[in-house]
View 1 (cartoon, rainbow, N blue to C red):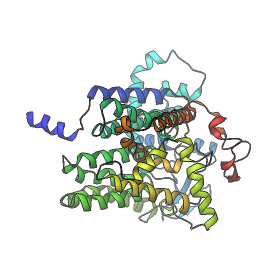
View 2: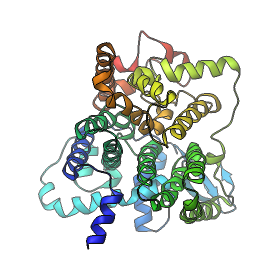
View 3: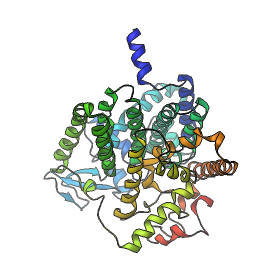
View 4: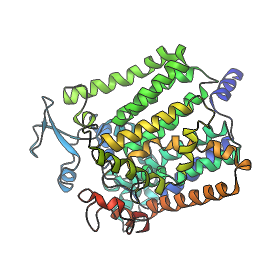
Length: 452
């Protein structure tokens, strides 16, 4: 027993378990009660989970009414030969066009909610909210309450990621400052306004990236964690194709910094890769789905690239430095290598590579209908950890910079809170005209979404 306690103390970073528990509970409850949900691309997640439980398959043929009601949104017919059919008469099975890994990973979180709600039905059956989504949720009817089931699962993942950020920061900061950094992550970034609104691919990306960084940071004391990091690294690609950058950067890091652990790291990743390729082959008759091979589809001209790069940084509708201005400190910190972690230079490279890919290679750089720059949300843990040096040197920082830091933090907090509490900011994408057809709107300072 003594050895077990000693091992646990080495694996888990210094910090108060009570603080971590309170952080988790606070972020989970706050994200969970905020009313906005954005179950758009992820809308099939709960239905896939139900079919996995009821019939042990991931196709959606059983939900014909929902498919027709949503005009087959984000669906594709995969025939028995693996060919994709565009007709609504499907000689095969209907699947979501998005990766199945996210819904599969989310299924236990959906089942857990049902397991909690169903025994409470004798009490909850007395309540009949006017909102059909809330009514479906409290009466354990996932087909009706699917957006709320998604949001609560997403809140759970964001709360877990917040605790991981706290544990990482606690290795460099006092407990109070580590808590502050974790709260900035959970409430003042797209972790709250995007990832906690529904089970987006980004929700899993953020959680997995925080977990990977935590494991590799702790691997300096517990080297075996570098090998085990192969599991979340490989899973990250299955939930979102652009996370191939995670795979490249972290595999190279392990190869250079934990060479002895590299074979075990690759061995840990192998089962995930095997399941991924086997499931793709069984459905599509090829190793990659159409979605996974279509993420990088263009090399736009210089003017468009410049517009995308600038737009992702400073446009009023998609600029990361507009929605989360405190990340300006992060960029300077990462560029100057102020964070004294062997992982920091690799994370800086990852952020830069990700920014280039989502700005230049991806055709819809503005990320369709979203609040802020959704495509950059995957790397938020890196941006927030880039603030560690600022908090480390707080006493020696000039008063002007301290005021700027506080003002930027509060501005980002206010902007992202609107994403969780106001439906109007999300309606900006469609009114007065659809942003996908009028991308010039992302530069309209007269009508930024956060002021709707």
